[in-house]
Length: 429
Length: 117
Image (cartoon, rainbow over all chains, first blue to last red; front, side, top):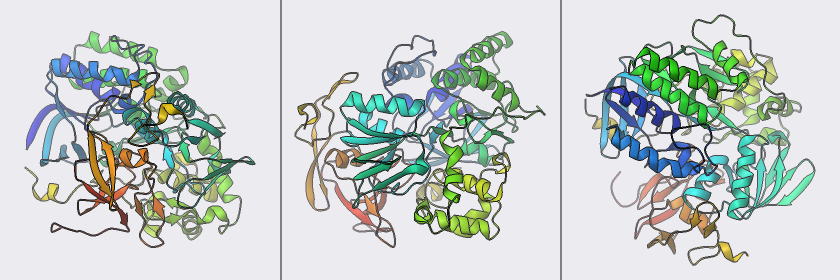
């Protein structure tokens, strides 16, 4: 069994900030990321940074990564890339798989900074090659310098969609169609995207980018079964945290988009606070960092953070903008009979379970996401439910009237990622 | 097509980018995809090399043969599973190209070829 002072999972903006802060405060830090290099979303975004301070503002995000790497090296943080932290067990040990083999890591404190994934909702044609998430498009455009298509449709109307339109046009692609509501979109083609129809507008296209926003991905914290609260802004559950970002499991912190942070500046500030708190830094230093974090948050987000604080009783919510893309999807899908064209669309991409099959399972008595999963296999595939559980929750809400705040995530168990069996057989204890 | 996006390796590459600058020179890497030679760039993933050449399909699903391609590009969705050097279920979006690599569009769950599984 390897040991470390503080294990930080995820080397995006929050994770890097946490690792640097904890190291500054004197802790021995291990920073773990599944990608070949650190930076997380900073690696594939080119919008200029704002509000991070630390000499980073004004740089395109991808160019800040090099500076942060230098700081990590100077701070003597042990950085493990290509390393998948796939399990967090009851005794506090973390299971890590690397190309060189697997091992267990015992850390005194753990900071989960695993970020978010793109929010995706099913529509006819969404499994066709050429339909991809906003991040996939940014990774192709900026890391690999490849256009996902020449004529591209963009779904969504929030900040992510606006950034994507700029990114696509900057790289030389043409944005031929924009649509806000995924329930109104139909993509068709012979084995790949050829046509996109939305709101009565039909356009030829060779790619469709889903830019509906993000959803937090605190999977290891869910494995640890920390207490959760509902965010009406995001339409999903988030870990409850103390003022110092510690969850209901002592010594386990969650920071950044994994806990609902709204932007890079907030993620960076949260990471810093979690790192200092985990390292037991001096009170004045923590207080100053808390003030900086408060400044990085919007008033709306500050209210949400207060309501999702451990020990707070008042969980009344600020309602999200009614136009949030996930709001109307369930109602639109359930407005018609089960065998309409939407009923034949895959809800679960991995196990190819249709919207109609999921609706039928609800009609037959499924009341939770776990119920739907057991009855249909939806959510049991390689993506581990990351791209389908939101749609399940929205259908439960639309069909049964169960408040979204009462629809909890499905039970998360190791492994958090597909891992080769050999990394279990050869695990170093 | 706009000259700015054309080069020898494929016509979907972004050769000039206002923020990122010119695409740096890179060593060409020869791979084989479904029996056809394909020139990739050193350091890129199989998925990027395929998309640069307009190849979108990575695999077909078990039963029904529905085609799938890159969806998340982050190794999360597993839509881009391909058979690489005889090993099935390799995520094309995470796996770098290598000289002489043999890549096949995967049918269903795939099967082991070459070395023992």
